[in-house]
Amino acid sequence: MESVLQKIDDLEMKLSFQDISIEELNQEVIKLNALVARQQQQMLLMVNKLHSIEPSNMASSAEETPPPHY
Image 1 (cartoon, rainbow, N blue to C red):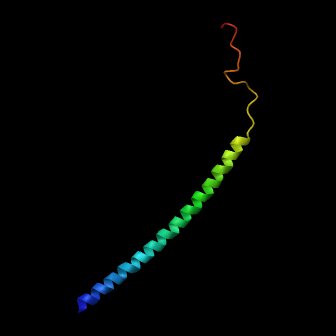
Image 2 (cartoon, one colour):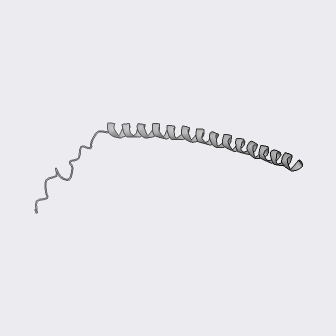
Image 3 (cartoon, one colour):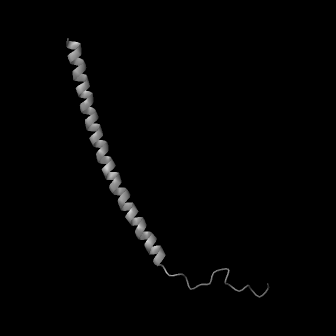
């Protein structure tokens, strides 16, 4: 009879450990989701800034007139 009680105790301890592990993992997932959300927001800001930058006043290489020796 003691072996059955011991097995039940062992299972209860394992279940308790699993509950703790699941909660710790859940907290890490929450932190990572917040981090990803912040990074997405920062990326969006960077993309918007890049789109708002005015093009350079310099002509592109295709628009440049060739040097006189050509």
